Image (cartoon, rainbow, N blue to C red; front, side, top):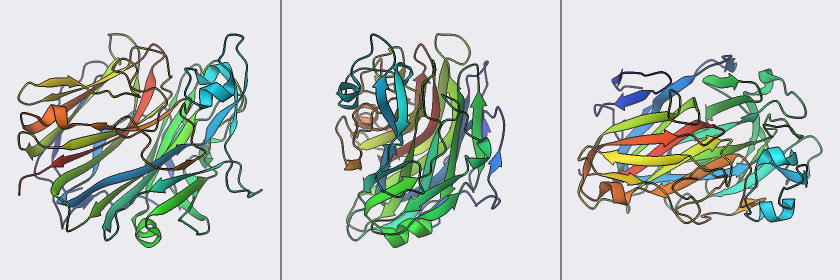
Length: 374
């Protein structure tokens, strides 16, 4: 990836990743080379966060996301009605019988969902990566060998098989069998452009269990546009389990270096996480700049003590059309937050600290966009 990285001290499962500033920038942007053609599966894999892509260019980051499974009926006696939960009421996936979302009317796919990718007109796609994942063990057990395959269709186009090109994160415990996979889809997105993208055949289990069913996908796209400000755009991924409480494994910290953001700079940060429950408190995201300024990251739809709460939002609002468009996605988060308060005094580096809720969650993707000085 062309960048030097050093791992700081680790205490239990607390891991800190420092990414130094000598990463190639636009037009020689850094991206991980594709892996083997066949997806690799690593059982019990804890994959630390590492940089996937970074560039300094006129342009930015956009993303499209959706969950692939939703509640079908209530199983717990005190559960909110499923229809109200889809509309945004508090509720956890373990209280419901969960069933696949299907929008393509294709009998050969067992789940399919869409989301609008807002690549600005006149922009050139620099890099695009598709992430998908979920729980394989609920009322049924899905085969892990299918984790590395999904179907992807560009706006108005036909499905194409996408194979994971990197090691697949895979974590099992007493209740869940969780994974995340990803693939470089830059050529497909350059050709397909803006509009409604569809992802189908995502390998997740349906049914009911004490842990619950969950899963979804996110397409992250970096683009260049000559009329936009110069920005540093960065993408990291991994697969980390964030446990509850204050002991080892309760937090995960990612330090982003080399920003050189001036005081008053604008910025945003996006997070993809799995099995965060709406209404189950204790999880948080804080950002600390090298100047010492520390802020809680939250907004109207993501409270500071329930930030991973099964939402797909940008700055607290839905930012693009999805099909279906549930407000409570019952275990799938893909949120973009305003990072500007953390940059008010300028920053050369930012430290992102994630803490787990009472039942814990899985952290999969972090992407950051900040104004840059040129």
